[in-house]
Image 1 (spheres, rainbow, N blue to C red):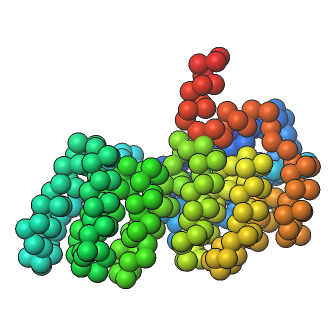
Image 2 (image 1 turned 135 degrees about the vertical axis):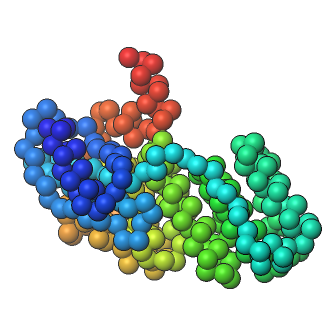
Length: 283
């Protein structure tokens, strides 16, 4: 049965032209009746994401396929001649410091540099775009721990800067080493600041990488959001996750959860890298 999941997911991803596949699926009984209920592709997602929903009786299984880079390469800050000419000596020195912090994998030093940048009297309009993009790329390489500093770029007046920062949020929530609660925290923070409906829809795909109790808790928080981009996509995501069309209130979500509780080993499966290591050590 597991092979059937891989075959179907692989076929869908191959159709999209993806170069690699990472799958996450909930624990399954040994001989379930397998039926593909629906397949949905995220809009405007980076990397591309596919969700495959199946049912065995009242149980919904979830498979998430994502395109993954074969290597996690550090970004290179190559400035064109015009960008370089417009930088002051101090700004050139700042980019070199950012490069060095990245080369040394010194997250503490990078965060200090970005915090100083955002506290300067030139921030944000007086800071050249080249420096902002370099800072975003460096922050994004370190992953979810740097998201608070990325928030400062999302309110920028330059759309390229904003898009670059949001892209790093999307990449962060797709980190396969994160637990479902960590993904939920990133999603709820994004719901406060991301106004693009397509981006929110892409990020809500990660609900399908959460155990039922965590997803329901997260959805209820999203229901209380005042962000129009959240509500534009929320009901569709609830229907996909639960397989039900009439779940529109927190009370109905709680009823659904009572009928679809977590599996016994969901703590290990959705707990992220640390939980997986603990499980292996326990065995």
